[in-house]
Length: 135
Image (cartoon, helix red, strand yellow):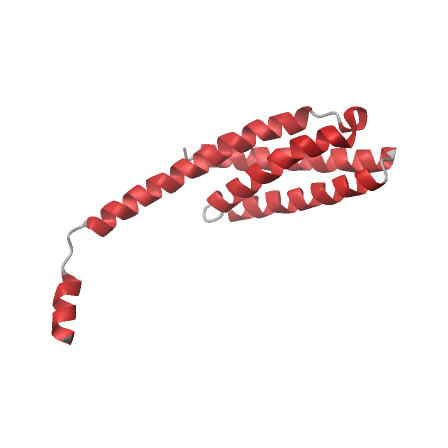
C-alpha cells in the first residue's frame, strides 16, 4: 500500500504550479484593487475639514477608510508588513481620537483628530504608492 501511495504521489501533471501562478496573479490583482480603493477613500478623508465640518463628516469618511485600509493591510501584509502595521495603528489612533472628539467636541479634541487623520492619510498614501509600484 505504501508503494502505491509513493508512486501515485510522485506523478506531477504540472497543475499545482499552474494553480499557484493563477492564485498569485489573483492575489496581486486583489492587492492592486485594494490600493485603488484606499487611495480614493483617503482622498475623501483628506478633504474633510474636521475643525470646520465636525465629527459627523469625519465619521462618514473614516468608516470607508477604515474598511479599505483593513482590506489593503490584509491583502498586502506579506509584502508590506511594516507599512500595513503602521496603517493599522493609525486607524486605531484615529478611531480613539474620533471617539474622544465625539464625547468632547472641543477645539483641542478636533485638532487631535485632524492630526491623526493627517498621519493616517500620509501613511496610507505611502502604503498605496509602494503597493502600486508592484501593480
